[in-house]
Amino acid sequence: MPLLSVIVPFCNVEPYITECLESLATQTLRDLEVILVDDGSTDGSRAMAAAFVEADPRFTLVTQERRGPGPARNTGVRHASGTYLAFADSDDLVPSGAYDALVGSLETTGSDLACGGVERLRSGELSPSALHMKPFRRSVERTHISRMRVLVRDRTVWNKVYRRSFWDAAELEFAEGIYEDLSVAIKAHVAAEQVDVLSDVVYRWRERDIGEPSITQRREELPNLVARHQAIRQVRGFMAEAAPRLVVPFDRVVLEKDTAFLLQAVADSSADDRGELLELGRNWLSGLRRSVVKEAPALRRLELHLLRKGLVKELAEVRKYRVKAAGEPRAVQLRGKTKGWYGDFPFLGDKRLDIPYKVYEISEELRLVARISQAARDGRRLKLEGEVFIRRLEGRRVKVALWLERGQTALPLKARWKKRRIFTAAIDTAALESGTWRIGVRATYRDLVKDGYLRLAPMAEQFDGADDDDEDAGGSTQEPQGCRDGQEAAWTFSSSSRE
Image (tube, rainbow, N blue to C red; front, side, top):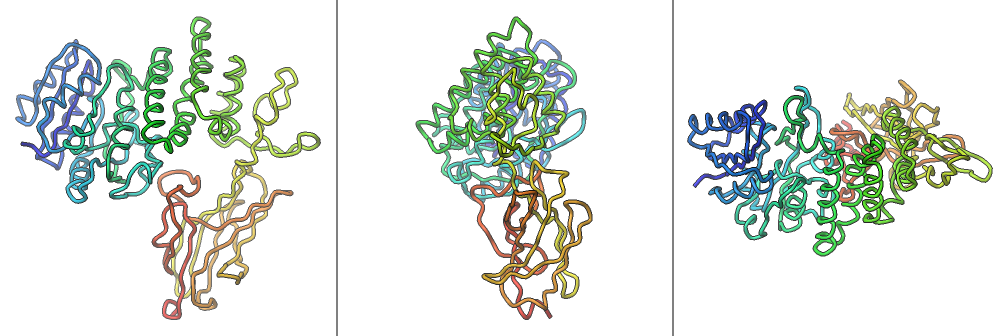
């Protein structure tokens, strides 16, 4: 009996299947079987798969009529004999040490499943998968989606290894159609007692540049969007019964990720599809919590308003603006009856469209970003480098004050500004009393004042604040040890540390 069974469904992936299977054959975890399920291929994929079966006894080939990736995976599961289960898509790649790391974690902890980070493979270039960055910024053993709710973003089955006894007990099975993995991935997270989260990259998700486009690459086609909506509704219904506290986090991901494809499809739509897409969009939005839609960023609220009103031409212009703004749309301050801060987006104040100003209201997005990127000891001095700015006011001249704080004691900290938002500072640790110190920040622009504390800059992505499950922690004189990305940075000094 092998330790791990890897199931690979395939259909017409001749340009990619060899590279995929080579990545499985060269895994450092040697005690595995690879079950290849031919789901009705009509190109050379089957012959390529058969070559691996002939060359490597760990590979097995199963054939079935074309039914889709879900039933093909189910077929593979029925043929699997391993203690653990994994899935790989036939156009993707698995790093050589991935299964060693995932299985090794489960062997150590006894958890039900282990999951890890993902990279996107586009035209030979690797980059972090935006969907997976937040869940896998750090490794956590024996956790659960109810405690680490960011795992609602972990909606794929191929960056995981499952304990087979857990899979069977949870009665997990793939449905027919596309987006069949969304339901299984979320149900597994909810059903598991313990989950291991690895920050290691364990999967490389390809964007095809030749051959048939993948399901992901056809995500803005009407049938594809209908199937996505059906899968979302199914998962949301399951959560409402089994894990109601996850509905709001799930809706947030849907609004951020899935809804973007719907909006772009509407913006690009032809007259033939436009009516159906608009109807789908309204049904799509009616299923989301109003509170989630209300708290969405102003630019997304504007897009949703235009979708509801059927203003397709205007929606297309806003979608183009989003790309041009590169994710950092600016804010403007208005006076008079509309006093406040608003997104400087298309159609603001356009009397013809009469879009309510509240759609553009952006005050909650004017967040203080204050982070340390480097900290190093030089004799008795602690040298720091970081940046401070107010989000959505990038490029504006913001007045910044820094101070060292311990209890009721506050000492000014002089900083040198290399650019408008980049600073360096040096702390004379010998001049400080023993104890734990943190660095306070005040940023002022006109009548807008934002207070906070310096935090650690995340390593994996642009700073967006601390996670819900983060806790403050202390540090050392060298660098803020024990703090997680996005947490307040603090240093503990004592007489011995200043010698």
